[in-house]
Length: 219
Figure 1: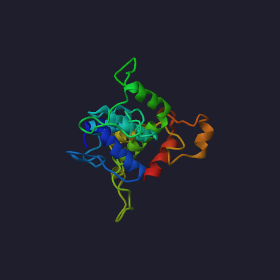
Figure 2 (figure 1 turned 60 degrees about the vertical axis):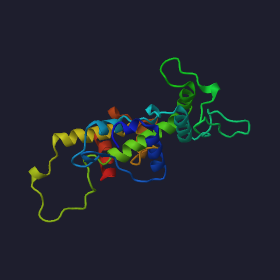
Figure 3 (figure 1 turned 30 degrees about the vertical axis):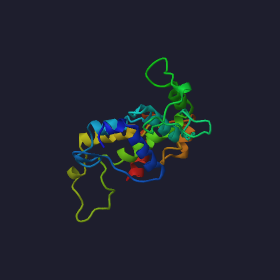
Figure 4 (figure 1 turned 90 degrees about the vertical axis):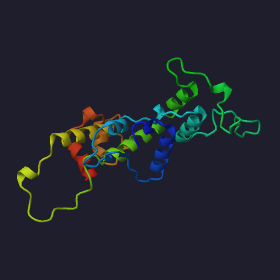
């Protein structure tokens, strides 16, 4: 995938199915796999950090509506033109059509009012998918394979450091996991719930001990 691919709702549907069925997936650029030593930054990585299924598009709006319905967990044909028996009506090319009663646009922007209401009512479903995608991909940036222990003599002190670029990449990856919530954070601890009574931890709230919890989970 490239950064442009992430703007297509069909690609978002594939990602949704992969996450739903717990299928591990990778993103590749012309330089290699995202997270490898060759790809720890660039347009695709930045696009993944800010990816939101709600910003994606299709050439035919009815297909986008069907996919967004599916992710929201509502009837897939909701907001589409249906026949009297409840089956989906199609145009001369066999494509679905928008329900004439649901083609109004929002007052500000080009989004349909139907999608706008869908985003408000089922915001958590879309945000959960967004976060899972970021975690699934960005957790590998600058980490490579999980450590398997050292063989041979112990490394010298000067060989144990990390570069400034690695620290910056780790910081960006950590920020992409925020905000933390108990349902979306596998490394969540009970003490977080006591400290943050609203159940949400922002990037600016993190302390060194919480960063260590995150690192230990990844490694």
